[in-house]
Image 1 (cartoon, rainbow, N blue to C red):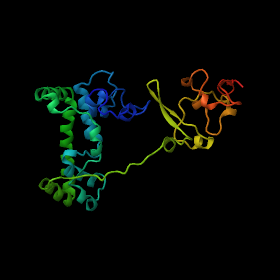
Image 2: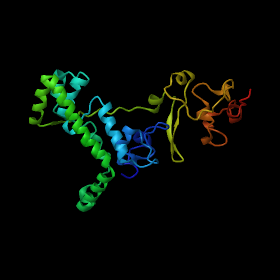
Image 3: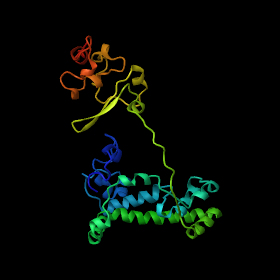
Image 4: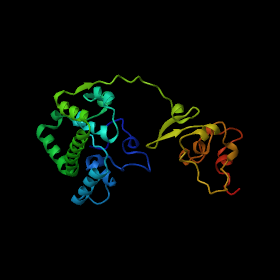
Length: 282
């Protein structure tokens, strides 16, 4: 897969934000991803998966899943939701044969080697290598299809309309539905993070959010400044007399700004010495 399979992909959007990442490297997606997720074994630094691990993952699949939907057999496999989740077939029936591709407009961003670029022999070897490495996922996929068919069959025994649609689904081709283009909406940093003239800058290989906020904005915010200095209970905020009108410690005093802090924060009254090094012991 390489490092990232899209030039626009960011590590946090692919693997999750720290400290809640699914894994520290995208190679997880090419190493029995589904088996590892079921087992909660997404750390690739651990021991390799074994046949016993595969059996445990299979038992989780059969014992804990209310429904298993197979996208390649969506029209039939989704019928099990009628019994497990109360799917209203009167509403869902027109959509059973529709194939929606919501991400089609983004496919141009994906740099995927083609058969003509790799060569037929090289592609065949690559596919064979991938299948061997992900043999547990391939086995799990076959078990998932079997379980899906079992659940649909059991549902059909209880609901005649499911039996009817199950039999008819193979007779009608799937129609591909192109999703309407989503209008482009320009969203500013201020809109996303609740800032006052905020910006995102690329500093030393890292994207840094500069987000001046008022006290009220800070209280209502859904996020916390990770650079804010930690304090023990009872200790004062460093330079608490400085933080108003959108200015705050993380934006003005973080070490990334250098020994004098963020110079855009200072005036004739406020400076690094009085705002950033104010004793925490007071």
